[in-house]
Amino acid sequence: MIEFKECFKGHTIECVFDQARTHTAKSHSVNDFSRSVGTKCTVDKIQYLDPNGKARSIDCFFQSGPNKGLSKGLDVIAKELGIAQPEKFKLPALRDHLSTHPAFQNVSRLELLAQKYHVRIHFCPKFHCELNICEGLWCFQKQFVRKYSDQTFPTLLKNIVVSREEFSKKDTHLRSVRRFWKALQSYKDGVSYADVMRLYLSSKCDGTVKSHTRISNTKL
Image 1 (cartoon, rainbow, N blue to C red):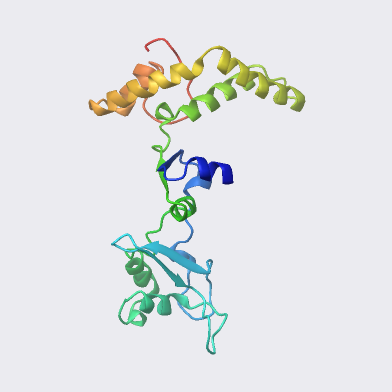
Image 2 (tube, rainbow, N blue to C red):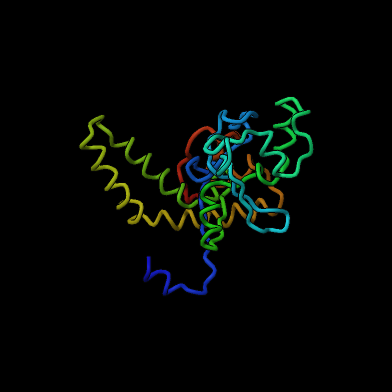
Protein backbone atom coordinates (compact mmCIF):
# COMPACT_ATOMS: atom_id res chain seq x y z
CA MET A 1 0.00 0.00 0.00
CA ILE A 2 2.89 2.40 0.68
CA GLU A 3 4.14 1.95 -2.90
CA PHE A 4 0.60 2.50 -4.20
CA LYS A 5 0.16 5.69 -2.16
CA GLU A 6 3.48 7.10 -3.36
CA CYS A 7 2.83 6.32 -7.05
CA PHE A 8 -0.66 7.80 -7.07
CA LYS A 9 -0.10 10.67 -4.63
CA GLY A 10 -2.05 13.71 -5.77
CA HIS A 11 -4.33 11.69 -8.06
CA THR A 12 -8.11 11.57 -7.75
CA ILE A 13 -9.05 7.92 -7.16
CA GLU A 14 -12.52 6.72 -8.21
CA CYS A 15 -13.84 3.18 -7.65
CA VAL A 16 -16.85 1.51 -9.26
CA PHE A 17 -18.83 -1.13 -7.32
CA ASP A 18 -21.92 -3.18 -7.97
CA GLN A 19 -24.91 -3.21 -5.64
CA ALA A 20 -23.86 -6.23 -3.56
CA ARG A 21 -25.16 -5.95 -0.01
CA THR A 22 -21.62 -6.03 1.37
CA HIS A 23 -20.90 -2.88 -0.64
CA THR A 24 -24.08 -0.94 0.12
CA ALA A 25 -24.59 -1.94 3.78
CA LYS A 26 -25.39 1.10 5.90
CA SER A 27 -23.53 1.76 9.12
CA HIS A 28 -26.76 2.36 11.08
CA SER A 29 -30.49 2.94 10.85
CA VAL A 30 -32.81 5.01 13.03
CA ASN A 31 -34.67 1.76 13.77
CA ASP A 32 -31.53 0.37 15.43
CA PHE A 33 -32.02 2.74 18.39
CA SER A 34 -34.44 2.78 21.32
CA ARG A 35 -35.34 6.07 22.93
CA SER A 36 -34.35 5.64 26.60
CA VAL A 37 -30.93 5.76 28.26
CA GLY A 38 -29.23 2.35 28.46
CA THR A 39 -31.39 0.70 25.80
CA LYS A 40 -30.67 -0.78 22.38
CA CYS A 41 -27.90 0.87 20.38
CA THR A 42 -25.92 -0.82 17.61
CA VAL A 43 -23.12 1.70 16.97
CA ASP A 44 -20.68 3.61 19.17
CA LYS A 45 -20.66 6.73 17.05
CA ILE A 46 -22.67 8.27 14.21
CA GLN A 47 -20.61 9.84 11.44
CA TYR A 48 -22.27 11.96 8.78
CA LEU A 49 -21.88 14.97 6.49
CA ASP A 50 -23.76 18.16 7.30
CA PRO A 51 -25.51 20.19 4.53
CA ASN A 52 -22.22 22.03 3.92
CA GLY A 53 -20.35 18.77 3.29
CA LYS A 54 -18.43 18.97 6.56
CA ALA A 55 -17.79 15.72 8.46
CA ARG A 56 -19.61 15.49 11.79
CA SER A 57 -19.80 12.82 14.48
CA ILE A 58 -21.83 12.23 17.60
CA ASP A 59 -21.18 9.69 20.37
CA CYS A 60 -24.01 7.24 20.99
CA PHE A 61 -22.79 6.38 24.50
CA PHE A 62 -22.15 8.69 27.45
CA GLN A 63 -18.43 9.38 27.81
CA SER A 64 -18.65 10.80 31.35
CA GLY A 65 -21.05 11.46 34.23
CA PRO A 66 -23.35 9.09 36.11
CA ASN A 67 -24.47 7.38 32.89
CA LYS A 68 -20.94 6.79 31.59
CA GLY A 69 -20.84 3.72 29.35
CA LEU A 70 -24.61 3.63 28.81
CA SER A 71 -26.28 4.29 25.48
CA LYS A 72 -27.85 7.73 25.16
CA GLY A 73 -31.08 6.70 23.49
CA LEU A 74 -32.93 8.61 20.78
CA ASP A 75 -34.23 11.35 23.08
CA VAL A 76 -30.73 12.49 24.05
CA ILE A 77 -29.34 12.01 20.54
CA ALA A 78 -32.22 14.05 19.08
CA LYS A 79 -31.49 16.94 21.47
CA GLU A 80 -27.81 16.86 20.55
CA LEU A 81 -28.83 17.02 16.89
CA GLY A 82 -30.84 20.16 17.57
CA ILE A 83 -34.36 18.74 17.71
CA ALA A 84 -36.44 20.55 20.33
CA GLN A 85 -38.43 18.59 22.92
CA PRO A 86 -38.11 15.12 21.36
CA GLU A 87 -39.80 13.60 24.42
CA LYS A 88 -43.12 15.00 23.14
CA PHE A 89 -42.96 12.71 20.10
CA LYS A 90 -44.16 9.13 20.18
CA LEU A 91 -41.37 6.74 19.19
CA PRO A 92 -42.59 6.10 15.59
CA ALA A 93 -43.02 9.85 15.03
CA LEU A 94 -39.60 10.58 16.53
CA ARG A 95 -37.98 8.02 14.25
CA ASP A 96 -39.76 9.50 11.22
CA HIS A 97 -38.57 12.97 12.21
CA LEU A 98 -34.99 11.83 12.77
CA SER A 99 -34.92 9.90 9.49
CA THR A 100 -34.87 13.25 7.63
CA HIS A 101 -31.77 14.44 9.51
CA PRO A 102 -28.39 14.03 7.72
CA ALA A 103 -27.16 11.90 10.65
CA PHE A 104 -29.66 9.20 9.68
CA GLN A 105 -29.58 9.66 5.92
CA ASN A 106 -26.28 7.90 6.09
CA VAL A 107 -24.15 6.50 3.33
CA SER A 108 -22.72 2.99 3.26
CA ARG A 109 -19.78 1.82 5.37
CA LEU A 110 -17.79 1.55 2.16
CA GLU A 111 -18.45 5.21 1.29
CA LEU A 112 -17.51 6.32 4.80
CA LEU A 113 -14.20 4.48 4.50
CA ALA A 114 -13.61 5.98 1.06
CA GLN A 115 -14.30 9.50 2.34
CA LYS A 116 -11.61 9.02 4.96
CA TYR A 117 -9.03 8.51 2.21
CA HIS A 118 -10.58 11.00 -0.26
CA VAL A 119 -11.64 8.26 -2.67
CA ARG A 120 -14.81 8.65 -4.74
CA ILE A 121 -17.28 5.77 -4.93
CA HIS A 122 -19.69 5.08 -7.81
CA PHE A 123 -22.34 2.34 -7.71
CA CYS A 124 -23.59 0.59 -10.84
CA PRO A 125 -27.39 0.57 -11.28
CA LYS A 126 -28.96 -2.21 -9.26
CA PHE A 127 -29.68 -5.43 -11.18
CA HIS A 128 -28.66 -3.89 -14.53
CA CYS A 129 -26.05 -6.44 -15.54
CA GLU A 130 -26.04 -5.13 -19.09
CA LEU A 131 -24.17 -2.13 -17.63
CA ASN A 132 -21.86 -4.17 -15.42
CA ILE A 133 -18.91 -5.87 -17.13
CA CYS A 134 -17.92 -7.71 -13.93
CA GLU A 135 -21.40 -9.21 -13.91
CA GLY A 136 -20.79 -10.39 -17.47
CA LEU A 137 -17.79 -12.42 -16.30
CA TRP A 138 -19.80 -14.01 -13.49
CA CYS A 139 -22.66 -14.82 -15.89
CA PHE A 140 -20.29 -16.59 -18.27
CA GLN A 141 -18.56 -18.54 -15.50
CA LYS A 142 -21.81 -19.66 -13.86
CA GLN A 143 -23.22 -20.90 -17.15
CA PHE A 144 -20.00 -22.74 -18.01
CA VAL A 145 -19.74 -24.38 -14.58
CA ARG A 146 -23.38 -25.52 -14.68
CA LYS A 147 -23.13 -26.81 -18.24
CA TYR A 148 -20.20 -29.11 -17.47
CA SER A 149 -21.14 -30.02 -13.91
CA ASP A 150 -21.21 -33.62 -12.68
CA GLN A 151 -22.30 -32.56 -9.17
CA THR A 152 -18.88 -33.21 -7.59
CA PHE A 153 -16.73 -30.67 -5.79
CA PRO A 154 -13.43 -31.46 -7.63
CA THR A 155 -15.13 -30.90 -10.99
CA LEU A 156 -16.65 -27.67 -9.71
CA LEU A 157 -13.21 -26.33 -8.77
CA LYS A 158 -11.76 -27.41 -12.11
CA ASN A 159 -14.61 -25.81 -14.08
CA ILE A 160 -14.18 -22.48 -12.29
CA VAL A 161 -10.57 -22.29 -13.49
CA VAL A 162 -11.42 -23.46 -17.02
CA SER A 163 -14.33 -20.99 -17.26
CA ARG A 164 -11.95 -18.09 -16.68
CA GLU A 165 -9.65 -19.39 -19.40
CA GLU A 166 -12.58 -19.80 -21.82
CA PHE A 167 -13.81 -16.28 -21.07
CA SER A 168 -10.41 -14.89 -22.04
CA LYS A 169 -9.91 -17.22 -25.01
CA LYS A 170 -13.24 -16.26 -26.60
CA ASP A 171 -12.73 -12.51 -25.98
CA THR A 172 -16.09 -12.44 -24.21
CA HIS A 173 -15.06 -9.27 -22.40
CA LEU A 174 -15.15 -7.44 -25.74
CA ARG A 175 -18.79 -8.43 -26.18
CA SER A 176 -19.54 -7.11 -22.70
CA VAL A 177 -17.83 -3.80 -23.44
CA ARG A 178 -19.66 -3.35 -26.74
CA ARG A 179 -22.97 -4.24 -25.12
CA PHE A 180 -22.26 -1.78 -22.29
CA TRP A 181 -21.82 1.19 -24.63
CA LYS A 182 -24.73 0.26 -26.91
CA ALA A 183 -27.07 -0.26 -23.94
CA LEU A 184 -25.93 3.03 -22.42
CA GLN A 185 -26.65 4.88 -25.67
CA SER A 186 -30.05 3.20 -25.95
CA TYR A 187 -31.03 4.32 -22.44
CA LYS A 188 -29.84 7.84 -23.30
CA ASP A 189 -32.11 7.74 -26.38
CA GLY A 190 -35.09 6.81 -24.20
CA VAL A 191 -35.34 3.09 -25.03
CA SER A 192 -37.11 1.10 -22.30
CA TYR A 193 -35.38 -1.50 -20.14
CA ALA A 194 -37.46 -4.32 -21.67
CA ASP A 195 -36.54 -3.28 -25.22
CA VAL A 196 -32.84 -3.01 -24.35
CA MET A 197 -32.93 -6.52 -22.89
CA ARG A 198 -34.61 -7.89 -26.03
CA LEU A 199 -32.33 -5.97 -28.37
CA TYR A 200 -28.95 -6.82 -26.84
CA LEU A 201 -29.58 -10.00 -24.86
CA SER A 202 -32.43 -12.11 -26.17
CA SER A 203 -35.75 -11.61 -27.95
CA LYS A 204 -37.30 -13.85 -25.27
CA CYS A 205 -36.57 -11.36 -22.47
CA ASP A 206 -39.73 -9.86 -20.95
CA GLY A 207 -38.09 -6.93 -19.17
CA THR A 208 -38.16 -8.39 -15.68
CA VAL A 209 -35.02 -9.43 -13.82
CA LYS A 210 -35.17 -13.19 -13.28
CA SER A 211 -31.71 -14.62 -13.83
CA HIS A 212 -28.42 -14.07 -15.59
CA THR A 213 -28.70 -14.02 -19.35
CA ARG A 214 -26.20 -15.44 -21.79
CA ILE A 215 -23.90 -12.92 -23.43
CA SER A 216 -24.55 -12.97 -27.16
CA ASN A 217 -22.62 -11.34 -29.99
CA THR A 218 -25.54 -11.54 -32.42
CA LYS A 219 -26.60 -7.90 -32.57
CA LEU A 220 -23.43 -6.11 -31.57
